[in-house]
Amino acid sequence: MLTKMFDFSKVGIDIGSETVKAVHMIKKGKKFAIKQMVKIHNNRAPKSVEDLNSKDFSLCINKLKNLLSCKNIITGIPNQCVIVRNAILPMLTKIELEEAIFWETRELLTMFKKDFVYDYEITQKGPDFLKIAIAAADRN
Image 1 (cartoon, rainbow, N blue to C red):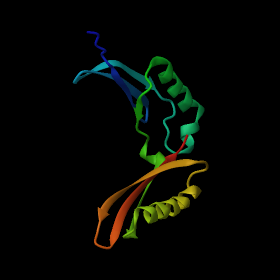
Image 2 (tube, rainbow, N blue to C red):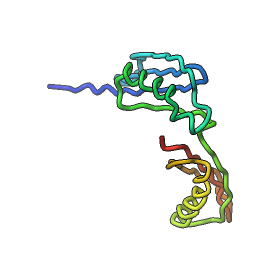
Image 3 (spheres, rainbow, N blue to C red):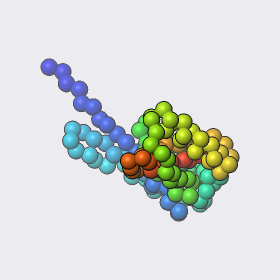
């Protein structure tokens, strides 16, 4: 009988103020193992949305791409590059909520120079209200 063994691998990236660190983890069965760890000095860590497009930061990320070979990459971005808004809305249907979220995010257009991505989560449901958190980041 022929059996296949599937390796699930992921890369986690930590963008710090002075270094960018990456860990390539693989899963075999129920266990995880570190396949590779990389630490690169970062001359200019992103402190704002604009900094994500800096030449120095791009060079740093390209170094990582050359050192790691994995399609599943998980990264965090500095909190200075993310905008989080909290809102209280009246109780809404799912369609109404999505429309309200759309209009709430339009106000974020002034904070981002280009296109951005966003997601939301209902943090609390009351008898006649919803508390939501909306997070947005530059698409680049």
